[in-house]
Length: 192
Image (cartoon, rainbow, N blue to C red; front, side):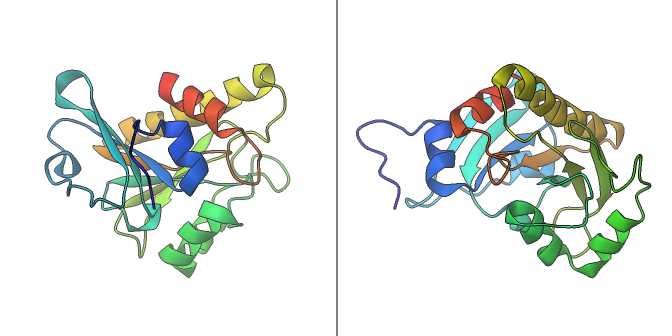
């Protein structure tokens, strides 16, 4: 259970506790921006107004159940599923997602999506219409890892804009088995 007193949790603290935080960007006029359900007392949700009626919502939840235009998958370079959020998204979307990912051309042997880049597929059995697969870095020194993580966020947003998507949910990219410290990853995601 989340204790909100005496101070509100930071994004990084929330991410550490649940490892399931979602950053949901809702652009003005999107259905997700208009139909957010208030959280119950056992969940965490913070809303940050952005320019032109858009909002950034940070909340606890299961990204596989988000009713948005796209969810972002913290994938590996092969894009064929794995552990953590990657495995959860593949299981929820069904076998069609694995087949769609396998159809993405390799840019080098075994690599369909290089670190810092993103690819898009349909959402299949998910509520989300699309899955944007991005590969964050395996954590090393911040000076090497931060630019790659920022690129993963930017590449995902670029694909969303190219496909005219209005709402997108991000998990904590690289914070699972890739070992990116939660505080540092949250800061990179916030800034970029």
